[in-house]
Image 1 (spheres, rainbow over the protein chains, first blue to last red):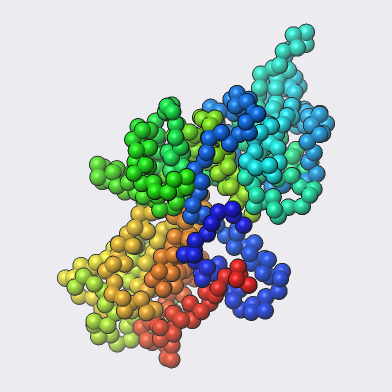
Image 2 (tube, rainbow over the protein chains, first blue to last red):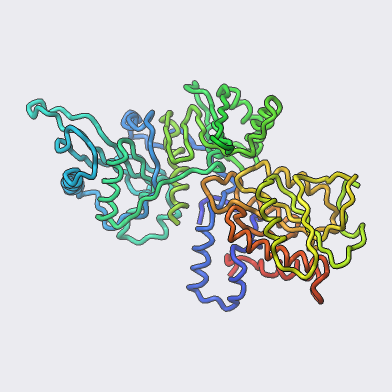
Amino acid sequence: MDSYDVPESTPRQCASSRLKDYFIGATPLQKRLESVRKQTSFIPTPPRRKIPQCSQLQEDVDPQKFAFLLHKQWTLYSLTPLYKFSYTNFKEYSKLLNAFIAAEKQKGLAVEVGDDFNIKVIFSTLLGMKGTQRDPEAFLVQILSKSQLPSEHREGKVLWTGWFCCIFGDSLLETVSEDFTCLPLFLANGAETNTAIIGTWFQKTFDCYFRPLAINAFNLSWMAAMWTACKMDHYMATTEFLWSVPCSPQTLDISYAIHPEDAKALWDSVHKTPGEVTQEEVDLFMDCLYSHFHRHFKIHLSATRLVRVSTSVASAHTDGKIKILCHKYLIGVLAYLTELAVFQIE
Amino acid sequence: MSVLRPLDKLPGLNTATILLVGTEDVLLQQLAEAMLKEDCTSELKVHLAKSLPLPSNVNRPRIDLIVFVVNLHSKHSLRNVEESLHHVDAAFFLGKVSFLATGAGRESHCSIHRNTVMKLAHTYRSPLLFCDLEIEDFRATMAQRLVRMLQICAGHVPSVSALNLLSLLQNSENPSLEDL
């Protein structure tokens, strides 16, 4: 299933269901149902993970092309495979989507004032945004406002951007047939109404399903460790964590900021195998932060919920919001997010 | 006496005592109340503890079953349980200890992976139960199950012992389908 190794100590003896043992003569369908169920129960943790390497973008792609993807807050969604999607029909899709948006806005569902009908939808491919050769090409959808003066022929302001990608999505690619295009990760920036409209159009046209991708505390701590492990020439932002303490009447937020070089130094002292990150190292890294905090403030951060992680590489919020700051590790960040999206789909 | 031993006291007449260990006070309290509401031929005693070792100056009955409650939302509860496990005698792990993991339903709040708890239960050769203690119906079902387990561990069910129960529960954890 995964391209990662599974050590022997992973509980092979622990079954996900006790009832299945009664099916001694399990039919192939039951076996397949069981294996599918085991995947859906929870995100299985790979005990090792590669540290995102820089420059995994193909060499012929100019990183400046993707500069517009950085420093923007993206809302994450997971997307099931698209049926009969074709990269050659972009013009047609643009027209259809344009008409759909105009129709929706006329219906009065969207409360936008101003240039409702002076919008243009553009589909374009993002070449080079992939992990392996097998990954389908990423593509971008943008809603632009058409300039009022047609004589100027100037490209209008970008109102909404959304892009679909798949980075190292091997586990999903293996299971779908030819008619489907697998782009499990969808990132959107812009008004929520536009996201909803575009989502509806895609769902109707390609028989897919969007779901908001939430990132739980466990994955956030993995991200914190992986991104702190990335080698950076200079640090743009402090490493910051935000925890939410559930208490009445209002939740309390605890924010903990560390100098990024200190965080890197801590990580280096914890890290053993080069090029790989293990569960124990992540736990140890976070435990060091927790115990340091406890020593000073007598608060057990481990009893609270990690809500936001912010490093020089990227920052992520548990609601599924991400901002990528460093183009070197763009692919690495997206690879992890793709993995989370794939697990949410399955 | 800092280590809990299973047979260091005489049993009370028709009494079964369970010890719930965990950092989640509210959930443990609610589970205890749900258990005490159950109809049971034995007299039930529920003890709650935040962590082990228990204070030694208190006179308490013999403990028949220990349930360690881990909240998957909080790493602190896992650490607490791991520390407490050191104060339990090895003889307890012959069917008289069980782990209960709560909070698996709200995946977005989980900071411990399910496999971590499964590994812990596997290391101590004890059964692991999953239950969202915040939901009343699940709590009631789990309370019923724990009462039944407690009766067996206290020896009140004829011809079934704690060790029998343990081997029954472990037999159902067969080799996974990957071997088939």
